[in-house]
Image (cartoon, rainbow, N blue to C red; front, side, top):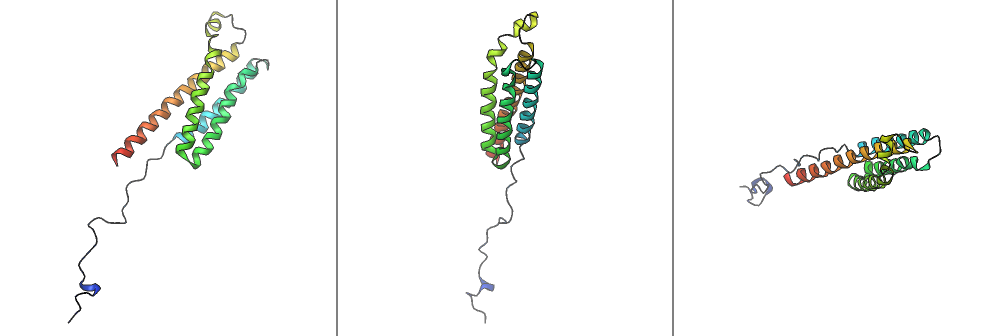
Amino acid sequence: MTNPTSPTNAPNTRTSTNPTTTSPAAPASPMPQLTLIVGGLLVVIGIVGYVATEFASMTALIPSVVGVLLLISGGIAMKNRKLGVHIALAVALLGALGMIMPLMSLPELFAGESDNPGAVISALVTVIVLVVYIVLGVRSFIAARRWKNAR
C-alpha cells in the first residue's frame, strides 16, 4: 500500500501557466543609436559652420557643443536607455531654444544682407535636426508607454 502523503500521490499543485514562459521583451528602441548619430551630425554642423564663418564666429560652434552633450547622453543611453534618452531630449530642447537668437537673422540672410550667413545657416540646420530628433523621441516615449500598457 502506498502512503497518501508521498510525493507520487500528492495532488498537482502547479498552476496551469508555465512558469518558464515570460512576457515578450520590450522592443529595442532606436533612440540610443539615433542620439549618437544626431550628436555626431551636430558636431559636424558646428565645425562646418565655424569654417564657413572663416573662424570668426565662435557661436557657430554651438551646434558642436550640443552635439557633444548628445554624444555623452547617447553613451549613457547605451547603459541606461531611459535616463540617457531623457537627458538627450532635454539637451535637444535647450539646444533648439538656444538657436532662436541666431535665427532672428534669417530674414537678413534671405535678403542677402546677413553679416554671418554661415552661422545663420548652421543655426537653421541645427534647429531642424533637433526638432526632428525631439519629435522622434516623443514618439518613442509614446510607443514605449503603449507597449507597457498593452502587456
